[in-house]
Amino acid sequence: MQRHLFAPLVSLAALAIGGAASAQEPTLADATPVVETEAGPVQGLEQGGIDAFLGVRYAAPPLGDLRFQPPAKPEAWEGIADATGYGAPCMQLYSASGPNESEMTRRIQAIFPTSTEAKMDNEDCLFLNVWTPEAGDGGKRPVMVWFHGGGYAYGSGNWPAYNGRNLAEKGDVVVVTVNHRLNAFGYLNLAEKFGEDFAASGNVGNLDLVRSLEWVRDNIAAFGGDPENVTIMGESGGGSKVSHLMAMPAADGLFDKAVIQSGPGVFSGKPAEAADYAAKILKAAGVETLDDLRNVRSDEIVEAVRKATPSGAMGSGPQFGPIADGTIIPRDPFLPAAPEQSSDIPVLIGYNKDEMTLFVAAQPWFGRLTEGTLNAMTGAMGEQAVAAVAAYRKRYPDYSPTHLAAIAMGTRFVRGTYLLADQQAKTASAPVYVYRLTWETPIGGGMLRTPHTLDIPLMFDNAVESAALVGTGEDAQTMADMMSDAWIAFAKTGTPSSELLPEWKAYTPANRNVMELNVEPQLVDDPEKDIRELPSEL
Image (cartoon, rainbow, N blue to C red; front, side, top):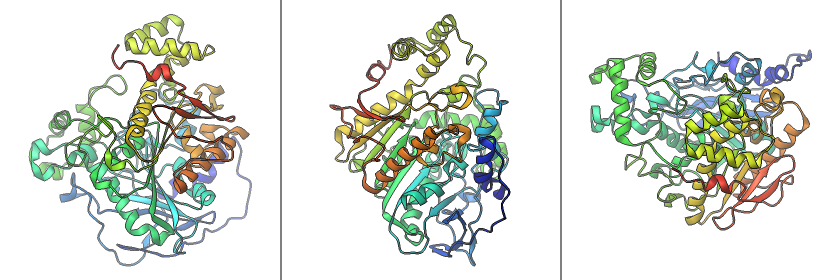
């Protein structure tokens, strides 16, 4: 299974563009140098001249007495640990947003293998991956740490779209991706049921992220990285994870810059609501005692979550995620103000023009809405949606009713991004940079326009490997060149820049500079002012 996840990075690129791999003499990957970590030596394999260490354990298995507890350091091992294949993803709680039978969906699954990972998930999941130009050479390269998307329910740092090989080579940087506990295993608030010994249980998934950053601090120099120049990055749920780390006292001092992509984390969950959700899950799992809690199988926990969670519209009902418990996360990260501890952290934040098309393209109504059904749909969604559609209709007169509905559904990304950027820029000594990705992918005849996740293969410089999402034209590589340049520059200097971009000026509440990322990029002033200023409740 591990080799299956690794191999497609070459072969699926050819399949995604409809070609076939040419016959070549087989080559053998060279072993990396052996690298000493605090817990013991590790050795991986080269990927095209870049040293790749996959499935490196950064914390003890969260099993037995460590289930629902803060992560512990891994025990020392004897011999050289294998780092040639990915570690297990956490137990997955993935539910498709609609029918998944199209060829395009299957191709995208190859780079974001959500359903595939459910076949190999495991509670023993605290692993990370490292790509470095040259391990053990004493280099002090910038470190770019990626926290995956999938909300707090599914995903892993193993996804092919996140492969760090190209970014490491292009930028002479060290790239790290992280697996951590998700859904009930990382965010089940058991404090009310089982007392003080489980006070951290509602936030252990985020404490795993802190532990991974401690591992980076203590070990990354041996891989050629600089522990004093660490940038944390994430998209969607990963962006929320970055936002929360900026407000977690335990993470203070563990990173130097932050990138938040299509996932502003302004609010946290509330302990009482999380405890109520946990009680329903425990009841569905038949868990009454501590012995029950330790012995219930992981698959039974997942099934209990499904039983305890009402079905309905996407995003409704109880959700897993970090909670503002007053200690691990003292309060909502960016309300009433930005976290003081991160006032010196440069922030790069942004979103994609048509975020929601990725989620709703499989719905029966996609591509079939009329003006009448659009009005009925948005009317049911509330006055804010009606106002958003009216605003977008003026901006994009060529948009169909379907695309107007989809873009209006994504206003939470827009409004959350500007709220977080405003809050940070008001009090921070470090700059804030805001982007809006407007380049449209040609796949599916352009039906997705600028969807959620489109930014990922571009900033990772994985356009060829992710042709299933970005297409095969020259423009995709132009965008990848531009965005990977900017992200690398930000990791190195705290300022995103590229020869393919105009000067990127910082964002402030007085000068809302936003870089519109397209083949012809431009710095614009407050491009979605009308959406940004929509009242929260009309």
